[in-house]
Length: 230
Image (cartoon, rainbow, N blue to C red; front, side, top):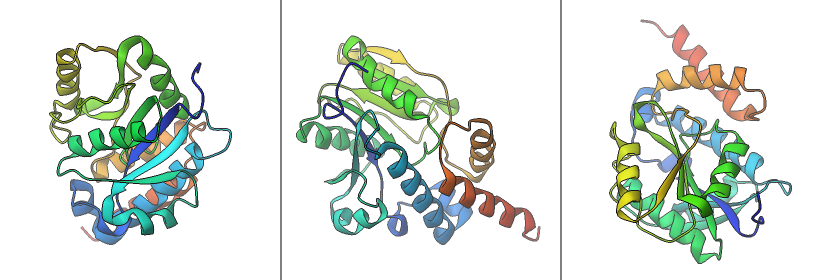
């Protein structure tokens, strides 16, 4: 990357593990196991992107009422900023705004549903936005696992993240703002228990993605489901 660590940041849209918004994954796992999974993901992302040698800074973007107690889950890795927003798109926009307010010039945004994305993909996204204005990674079902921008624009506001056309929405939003797009390597987002199986297989194949906590918790959750009476 040609930009410095104090210019580039990964803004992770997150929630307190015990107070996450209900989702398909939470419904399938149950609140307690969903919280276990979230804690593991938070710990691994904090270690992967919060190390001194990481090529970008780390900013956790959480609901305003969770700023203080959320910090306990990050082990001091990265800053914590409070954001608002009733939709995922609004929260992603506000995460980017929070990062720009901290004087970062290159911002990558992602959620906790992309715990397996290699660090170099995030760094690559941050490095491409000066040329394109938007760099993003899409997965199957047209999900978005990371997006990077270098200007404070409401680019995510009208993106229906939970639909099957989120990536298409983002491309349209970029065009309306006069931005070009740099598509990144395809991947997937973790939205259901079936995605947990894919996540386990992915982490087994991609040894360069360090996610020991997530790997261990996912293995336990899958084993418990396999042993459950049918």
